[in-house]
Image 1 (cartoon, one colour):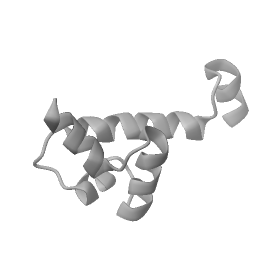
Image 2 (cartoon, rainbow, N blue to C red):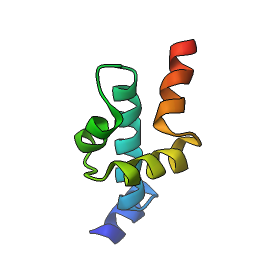
Image 3 (cartoon, rainbow, N blue to C red):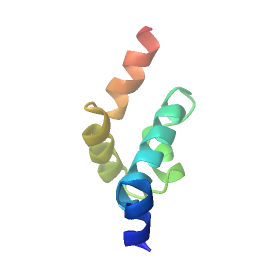
Image 4 (cartoon, rainbow, N blue to C red):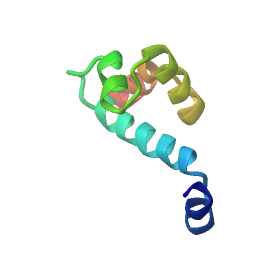
Amino acid sequence: MSKFFKKHAGILFSEYLTQVRMQRAAQFLDDIQYKTYEISEMVGNSNAFNFTRAFKNYYGMNPRDYRNKKELK
């Protein structure tokens, strides 16, 4: 299935899943009622530390900085 996905989508399934999770996490960060560990769980990552690391790899900043940047706009 992974090879089929790569052939038709142009990216690995794991990369696609990370992309979807990080974009959804960014949407949740716009709502200040959610804490980072809650967002981590909502996007399918039970470990908040790993989520924060993945978010930073994807966006170049940690979730707190991302949220603060959005609040300044």
